[in-house]
Length: 99
Ligand code: SF4
Image (cartoon, rainbow, N blue to C red):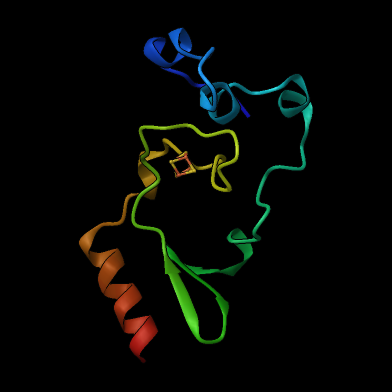
């Protein structure tokens, strides 16, 4: 996991909670265990549609996020523009969910 933090946030890391949310610890830079903790990749049936449980589905609309939280379960994907769904992807999801 890489630490990505804006200059402004860096300046205020002394405030309670800010460092906890954004500043990574040394162990997080060497751990390989934080790749896909919710096993979403293996349950992504088609692009953007995670179907892990029988009666619910998760649609990942975009990987773009202004934050880079150290606890994010999708940190491996955050910032990748290829994760943003296009109209065709959404149509595919709708067809898959309602078939
Ligand atoms: S998607 Fe991840 S990085 Fe973005 S705000 Fe949520 S937890 Fe933080």
